Image (cartoon, rainbow, N blue to C red):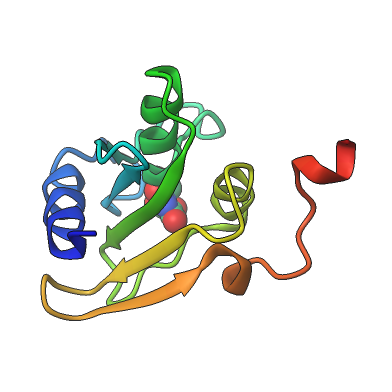
Length: 129
Ligand SMILES: O=c1ccn([C@H]2C[C@H](O)[C@@H](CO)O2)c(=O)[nH]1
């Protein structure tokens, strides 16, 4: 897995963030089992609540292209370390507990977690079997 490439793509996606209200830019890049990447940025709305986070933009792009086998997601934002919000953790969880979540401060400095570490004891699709 080319983690550096995922991080680079997340940084590029962050530049596309549409954030007229918060001014807070976030970028994400998903890697799938077939080796494909899908990027996302946050997209805000004048009525605020429809705002979609970068992570969910990237996941929506992957899934809507038929790619549900998500292996990793790299995230970068305007904080030194930008961690995914609770809603995004749950959305990532939908596609697996072992997904690698890379929180990137820069191209060189990043932290790695499994989704299960970020959202322990989670509720997921198996609960509805
Ligand atoms: O993990 C996160 C946290 C926040 N945001 C966005 C939502 C909103 O546009 C802005 C400020 O919350 O950052 C993300 O995209 N991902």
